Length: 178
Image (cartoon, rainbow, N blue to C red; front, side, top):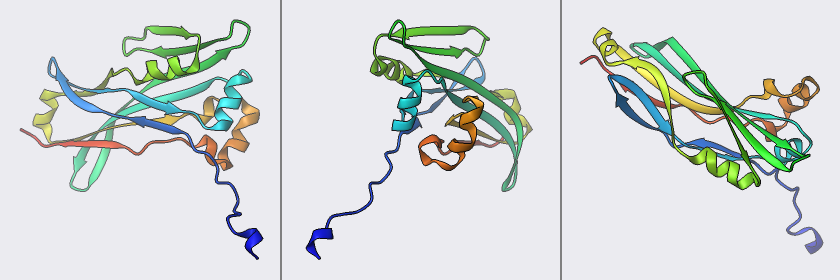
C-alpha cells in the first residue's frame, strides 16, 4: 500500500499571458500603457519550434455604462505574431502599431523576444475627455492567445486542450461624467 503513496497523475504545465496596465491621459485621450508577460505552454513551444506562428492579441474596448449594463462603443485589437525561423535560427516578433506601421524585430534567443514583449507600450482606447461629458464610461484591456490564427488542422485539438487557452481576465476602469 505504501508503494502508491505520492503517485498521482502529472498536472499539465500551464503558460502565462498577462498584462500590467496603467492608464494615462495624452492630449485629452485616454491611453493604456502596459508590457506583456508571455510564457508559452510546452505545446506552444513545440509548435513554435516546428514552424507554427503564434498570435497574441491585446484587446482594448470602451463601453458606455447604463447602470449595471455596459454597451460596447469601440473595440481595438493590436496583434503580436511570434515565429521561429529555423534556417537562420532566429525568433521574430511582428506587430502593427496604432498608426498601421508594421514593426518586425529579430532575436537570436527566445528569452530576448519575451523580454522585448515586457517593454511597456501605449495602446489607444478611443476614449476622449470630451466623451466624459456624455455620461459614464468603462475602459477595458486584456491579452489573449488567438487560436483562430493557427493552421486549420490545429483548430479542433486546441479547443479541448488547456495548453492552448491562454486568456487573461479583463482589466477594467470606470469613469463618470465630470
